[in-house]
Image (cartoon, rainbow, N blue to C red; front, side, top):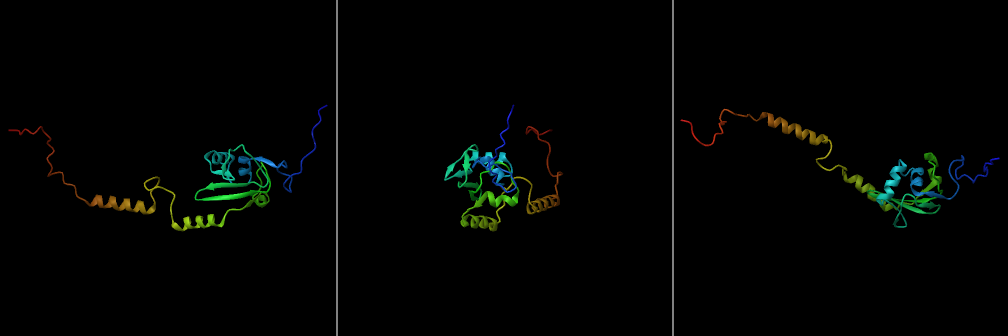
Length: 166
């Protein structure tokens, strides 16, 4: 007969969800801890070198354990998180304090506030839709161009080879 293994490891979460093995893939943990919206985005960030542990860039398949400190670079700042539970299944937002501890330096948040105060818009000039100010400038330019009279009666349209007709 087939016997099922009914022994279960203790669940890290009070409601019984999550793995209790103490190890998890980095990309799955980043997704489960709600640092990235999708696992694909977490894996892409790892591949781009935006995720590191101890200053070393990590692959998405790297196994992480409780106590590791993960640095996630999301410009303009770098967030730091200490793993309290290694999970691979996404949990509710209310349970996040049981999963990770935010150990980001206060200087990083000051940098974020300075960037917010500076009023920098993340769009390069001339790309995408015009802003309201740029649209008004274009409308003013069009209105001025429409007011300029164009006289074609004074212009000689005969573009001959330079010889005069007799």
